[in-house]
Picture (cartoon, rainbow, N blue to C red):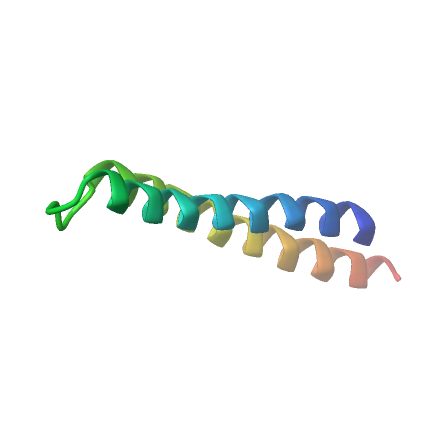
Length: 68
């Protein structure tokens, strides 16, 4: 179970890195624009997904502890 969680964690980490790179790329492509609503929407979705993922990890650890 632990290895499965770690594998999924790397996917979430990669998603966060890609989102950060997207922000930097869009800032270069759209100079003079202080807000990028589409990027902000993606960042919000990634943040929400990471929060849900953290909850899943906590629940798995709690339930796994009950089984042992």
